[in-house]
Image 1 (cartoon, rainbow, N blue to C red):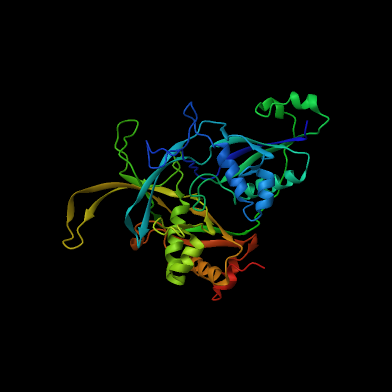
Image 2: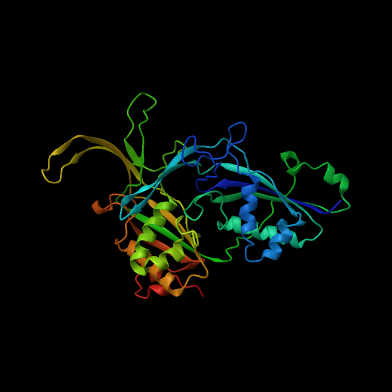
Length: 410
């Protein structure tokens, strides 16, 4: 028997997850489910995310994950298991649309199924190899997952697929422990009883972590629409600020909203070429260069200490100042509160890119950049309370005129 190593990872979603099944029966992007209808994370998705971290070292990638080229092949030394749902999950449908100056782009609207924040999954990683060097490679990947750099599913650079590792255990069987190994079942929770938690530090290699603590001033409107009725038959609001679909009504700001606002302002500052280079793009008409992956990652933000108000309004004709017929609507809006935004910026970001991003943060702090809809009537304004880069406090520099120094990494 070869030396066998097992890692058991229990992870809780810190943001919605959407691992597509390739079907569009319910939405434009349905999540993958098992034969019982429960969502899960396929082992192939987990392996793909981990393998991608070694794209810069193809030789090591092939040695660890295996390869096939013509008549030559190398078996993978690492075995990944499906991420199984530990507890029942809340599921939802998220709407998304590409905007151009706050106006929806034709043909650019779609909806997608997601597994909501808070759902817990458990997975196993197995190593069958005598060399402990493979352990270190896998543990470096787990450390990146723990840091939030590695994410699962779709729209990972826009806040989706972030997990928090709530439990990590490691079990090693040496070549002379055949009987112990035969008695061990990695899928049986009882086999892991008595095994201590295994601690790994976060690994942010390749990225700078920009952390902002924000205070929300006034209302914010990132809408989701509904035609549902309440439990007692009452009509629910026509639209409300987007929230977690776990009956808690916790208001959130999707990473897509942050990315859209920052990208639009970055475009004003730096132009199209620089914007595409940092934020990425997809252009199916350009067969030579159809896409470029984003080098900046935004988190989804949860709003706390906010107030939810439900109001019924009439739409007013701005020319006659009269109410429009059949234009009565009810809205549930989030007011005030606090939230946190985390931005991961690639270490290879240029000084100009950092300066433009710093200027955008200052714009937001001074009220010149708003998030979400109805920004022309004062919604979506934030003030930066705290700012840090890789754990170094930069809050005192929020009034600086040298925007390049705001996000400078030494």
